Image 1 (spheres, rainbow, N blue to C red):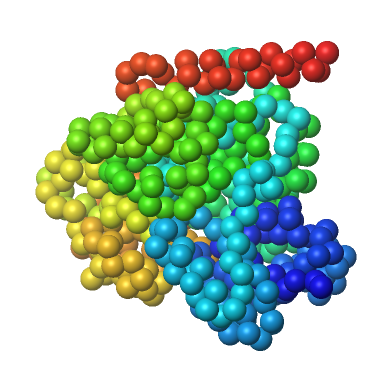
Image 2: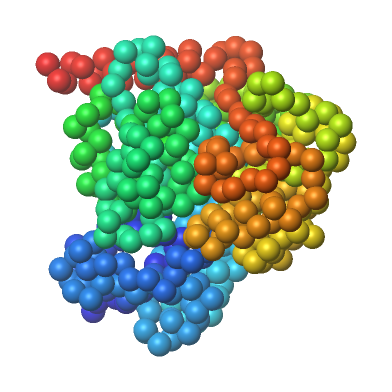
Length: 448
């Protein structure tokens, strides 16, 4: 008998798992996706052009809140869990709900969901959202430049728009962001890489994306999202850890999986974390994955030249996902404000408008930082209105992109950026070359 399957997702891994495990399977029928974490991604259709010939009308996407009703109405036999950065407690609450409704609960393994590449793959992953993957990926790119290798970055999916048009996306210039109608969240991941002249792929169908990427690269860099595991089988697996959230490396799915798989484990943000927390994370790494090369790193905050924040009342705008489902109360902007003597970090909550006000209600741990939510034009407008209303001397933008290109600012502003920096020996360059060079030698031999 054909099983009815429902996939619980968040517009990313759910589509990848479907494409990899179920699209061509005659043993199951996928009756629905559910969506959560990211606003405004439900009430869509996974289109027939992507779903395949067995689904001529596509597959509907519902809000996860409808899960119990969907299990009963659609006679679901099995629920497949397919998103990341969720606490073990919340994950098992969902499993209990599914089982109480009578369905099986399944989490696919890495072997069945990672695609094999004919090129060497370096994966940059983490145990939580906001550990510093983006700046580490840029550093990995520079190491490969030193080795004289052609590479492209393949980014974890963020398909929040028209899925038909997002099957395979390639970004190499600013015009591509407008062409693909990117949200702020997408721009934050792609733009810093394109700024440095790197090529980025993303989209929905990662088998097709990998095939395209392999045509122009000698090495593929997998740039992970949240704390998800790679979609491509890595030859070198790098995992970032955050001592500001010590203990989270064994409390959130699938972050611990990344830690256990890591060839190189990096404890980041040493420059702003307490020694006790760093040592706590170090002990965890040594206990869970003693074979990994353990590195220490700083996440260096850099301010624009010619400006300062000392003595000013500062409104801090931080990266949205790191603060929301990443669970961080603050990011690089608050660190910079404190380090450089701001008189006050302004509480943004009294000035919050529309979707921003809703975000604070949904994430009560947020207090002094304004999350840069921009999944729609309405959210971007609410972010702009919140900043306009705020009573402050200076707006400190600590998002990966320059938001001043997208919204109007009627106040003095300053951009904060952060970069990866080695903290002692061995360096990431040394560790990566030691792991990667034998793989590159084998690849070169195979090409002859």
